[in-house]
Amino acid sequence: MAAQRFYHIGFGHDDLGSLPPSIALLSGDPERSRLIAQTYLQDVRLLSENRGLNSYVGYLPNHRPILSATSGMGAPSLSIVVNELVQVGIRQIIRIGTCGSIQPHVPVGSIVISNAALCRQGAANDIAPIEYPAAADPFLTVALVKAARELEIEHYIGITASVDTFYEGQERSHSANPNLMRSLQGITEEYRRLNILNYEMECGTLFKMAGVYGFAAAAVCGVVAVRTVTENVIMPKKDIAVNNAIATAIHAAAS
Image (cartoon, rainbow, N blue to C red; front, side):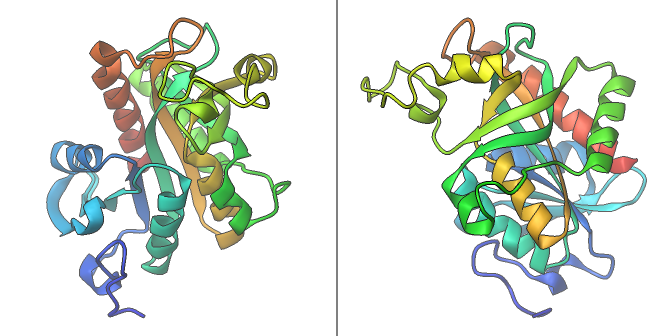
């Protein structure tokens, strides 16, 4: 298997060099993966742009090798990428994403560090039973919290709702589908009362995969919308939120 280039990610273990990384920073957006590699890493090398799943290998300032990879949008794509990353030797994964807050005290521009997920995702059900816990690795999570504190980045720690769809699954009424199923009407308020902090689309499946496969996973997401105010992403503050999430993950990985 060592010489194999995997079908989806487009690279294999032998492409990672003589000192292969064991940790990956995983972004849904290929441009975010490129930004991380080009801005935060040293001696960066492009591994693959196959299927838009851009992957880069480089070094942190402390000379630790690290991978910046792309999961694509949503849990089905992430599940494929993560499976192949584990096969090339990755043992720690930090998801760097964006999210919508559903609590009024979690503002745009801050970050949410997920310690667990309410997992409403079909892909996860192919990994483990619906009752199987979707929990982040406690040590990676503590490293993210410590990093956010040291960088003085506003952060919140708690439970994330991971769902499969951006519009219907997150109870957005302003979309091409004005007819939300009754089972989804009022679900955001229900989650709010359950003290869930935010919506996103990947980390529940990532956490279940980590438990089943035996690797460590954590997630940090920049808040780009506050659903108590609007359904829309606040574009002028998106870069602030994303950069805060990236900086936190990089600092944690370096530690």
